[in-house]
Image 1 (tube, rainbow, N blue to C red):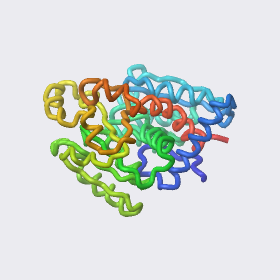
Image 2 (cartoon, rainbow, N blue to C red):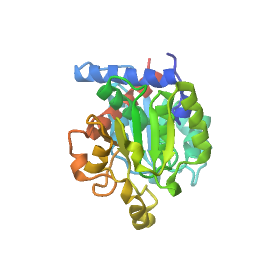
Image 3 (tube, rainbow, N blue to C red):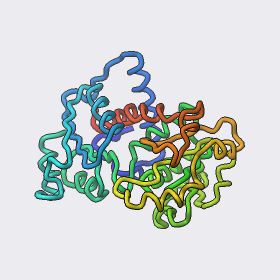
Length: 311
């Protein structure tokens, strides 16, 4: 599989074989790390890490993944560089592309990460924008495959804010790999119709099912219940209204039992607001694999960099 030089801006740009290759490569790299085998695929590479938004998992995963494979990561806080303010995205991209071998961007506008990819001449990785969070979905796919031994045919249900970057990205990545996806949310928080239509096309290609509903009965037979924070970064003023709206979609003991499947697992991209989208009881239960997901950010991000930049 040749992904050399390819950017990861959204999983729309990757086909099923490429996504599955990255997940399998991540498992291989994870096994090597556990065995104490050091990699050198990125030896001598310099990687810029741009962060406009705060981060725990994404920043740590990119930093450790780069170091594990011999690369040198450089952290660039959004408040400390000129990106899109005193200097255009295009000009910043041209400067960084001459100094670095790859660029990670975590920020607000999808157009910014796309601009960096268009003008830098090096692979660019989307560490999160307001629209998409593709590296998280790769970690979720690896976690699901570890839990169930497969992806195709699993029943995945996302509850909560159905139009945020996680719901968007999960629909794309999971449907492309044959997972049945249900987005369960109040109608005012359903995903954009344009994206739903695109995702219906992915579902037709793989034979997976896509359901968009406000009825929590859709959790029946779920293998996975997934949620995210109810109030995304930048929406804090909507907190009370959003909490009231989404209370019926909380993942609690009763919601887990409603699946009728004793093997249902709970997933969350973190950080979680316990007591809102999930109860502490479920978060800390044996069904919860949230820390496996968090660790798998490292291995899947490493796989992306090795596949697109490695020697």
